[in-house]
Amino acid sequence: MEAEVLRLGHRAHRDARVSTHIGLVARALGASKLHYSGQKDDTLENSINDISERWGGNFETEYIKNWKKFAKEFDGIKVHLTMYGELVQNTISEMNGKNVLIILGGQKVPGEVYDIADYNIAVTGQPHSEIAALAVFLDRYSGGEALETEFPDANISVKPSERGKDIVRK
Ligand SMILES: C[S@@+](CC[C@H](N)C(=O)[O-])C[C@H]1O[C@@H](n2cnc3c(N)ncnc32)[C@H](O)[C@@H]1O
Image 1 (spheres, rainbow, N blue to C red):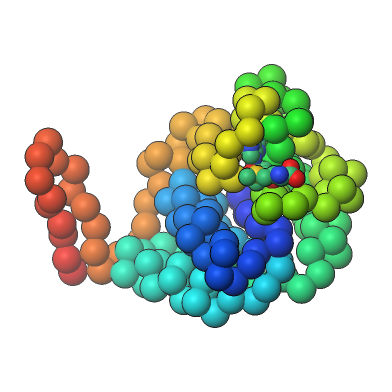
Image 2 (cartoon, rainbow, N blue to C red):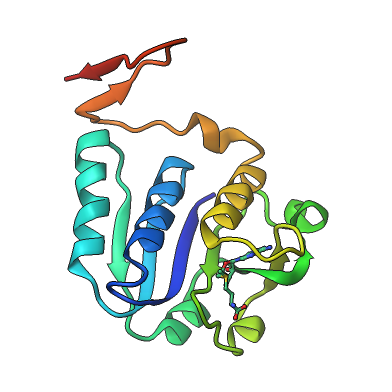
């Protein structure tokens, strides 16, 4: 099973931090790829790739010009995260073990996404953040295994410790 993320409507300057964090959360919690639409942003791609090079794993970031075509042709289940959807805790069992494309909106969400998606899923019915929604979804989707994601060929990693910073460098 594999999870990929599609972030819609990226704006190079205004969304730099949020989109970078979407990529980092996706990577840290076991997704394999971030696709993003909106404005192509080399700085965003370089920031995420730089983390991957140092901290390991094979996470990829890719700009998508035509997100509708890409989403429609995705080989797996399309899951749009939205506060208006069905609750994740009631629906996640239908997605566990299957390839998923997790679609996250930006400031404005195009209406078509609700129809292109196989599932519109809410992480609570309250307005919050695409980063938080992604994290909770990946945890539930993986049945908790997202927290055990491994990162081969890391040049740097953290050894958990009760206090202070214990960093292992290759
Ligand atoms: C900050 S919200 C803005 C949404 C936008 N105002 C709209 O047109 O709906 C950006 C994204 O965060 C995600 N999001 C926010 N709250 C959510 C929730 N409760 N459950 C699932 N996803 C959520 C959705 O993917 C949403 O498109």
